Each structure stands twice: as structure tokens, then as C-alpha cells.
Image (cartoon, rainbow, N blue to C red; front, top):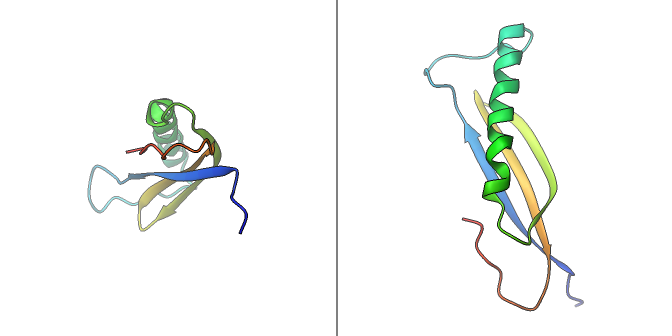
Length: 87
């Protein structure tokens, strides 16, 4: 088996409405604007969450059961040293 030249880690952020029972309707401009604001807030602090040496490989944004789920796949080149935790 050959070794892979990258190692991977996953960052996940869950964002739920502040008020229980509220369900956004993304055909409404107010809900679209709220989603955009929330995504901007999350991605503003994202660089602080990524340790030195790691880079974003891919990302995904989805809504499930009224919770916004943002996943970011990180990678870094294998250097022979133990992997640092991203937590």
C-alpha cells in the first residue's frame, strides 16, 4: 500500500435559530439575507479555526432540520511528524 501525500481533517459548524420553532423560508428575501449574514459571520472567523500548515481542500453548506451545517475539509502535506489536532 502506498502512502498518501496529504492528511485530512474536518471542521464542522452547526448553526441553529436563536428562537426554537422558527423555520426560515428561503424564498423570502429576509430569510435569504439572514442566511447570507450568518454565512459571512461564520466564514469571517474561519481562518482563526484553521491551524498553521493546513489549507481548505473543499467545503459544503447545507440545511438539515432547520440547522445550518457548514463542513470544511482541511488538508496538509504529510511531513512524517504526528498530526496536530484541529480542535
